[in-house]
Length: 183
Image (cartoon, one colour):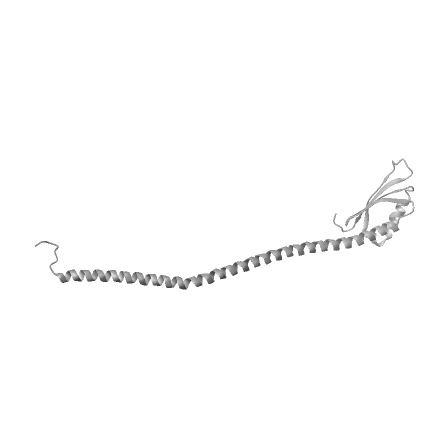
């Protein structure tokens, strides 16, 4: 008898049935898989669309917040600059009052024979330049200045007179320092 010949027809029929069953099962499984994938895509598409809309809204809100933050930072910088300017103006206003008071005091104590050419005043030092035909009036002027309330805390640092002038007028410079002021 030859080997490999199936003598029983029912075995061949069973093998064909099993093959058909396997093919049908694979086809059904593939169909069910495709249907599940299609159903999942139908369910996921609205969710993806909704998520895309939410992402777009969040992106718009983020851009708005960034713009608001940048605007707030710009406003804070502007406020800081304005605060500094205001402080400078206050200081200038206070110093201008002190300067005007000091200049008024310097002018009110001035003898008629003395002419001022320059007055410089800082927080620490006052420098007065001028000319006089009568050098003996300088001590009178210094005594008058010391008697003024704005010069109570001032001490004489230097008094120089130019004796080499060819004219009748003699140049002088008075440098005074405020006590306790930082140089």
